[in-house]
Image (cartoon, rainbow, N blue to C red):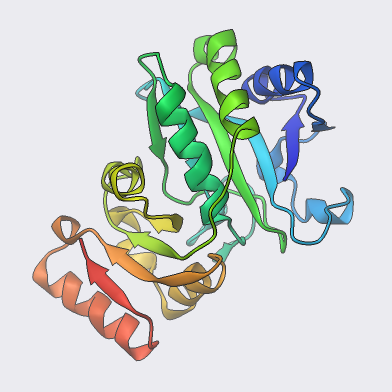
Length: 244
């Protein structure tokens, strides 16, 4: 993996300093990662490697959290990237880091997947690992150390993965399935993205999630008409799915 942090991001720098103390190399940029479109043109990424962006997570509710997510936009590009464009993601590395965070967490921070959101646009496989959600948490040394340890000790198992559809932005059910049943998730679309799930977006979710075996849908998130519509769309695209 290639680790990248922005000098403009306190949480990213917090995590980075703990990695550097352990002798792990971090690449620093001036631009915040969400706006670093096609960073692979200026940062050399060895073939097959995943870029891990160390960053802050913002929340209006100020939830204390350690989050992991894929990047991309289902429609608009309000926070970097391109419209209607998802990046390639690494469900196996995300799962390994999530499990490590869950095991190491001795704080009141919430460890969770987030649904896919924000830039950058890229043809490189990438993920975000973040500390949230206020200035106080961004500079929390212990949180930075936890995240650094989780990344350093990651050991991805590449078997098969899934895309998730449904649930809120903080993907509680998919996080639980990952921790309790070992299911690996790549791109996740929250229930609020239902109207944005075009054929093209569904294909991008599937094709840009490494070794994807299909979709898992949170059945409690949708009414019968919405579930039927999802079934019809995924069936037409010959994409496997199941309700959970």
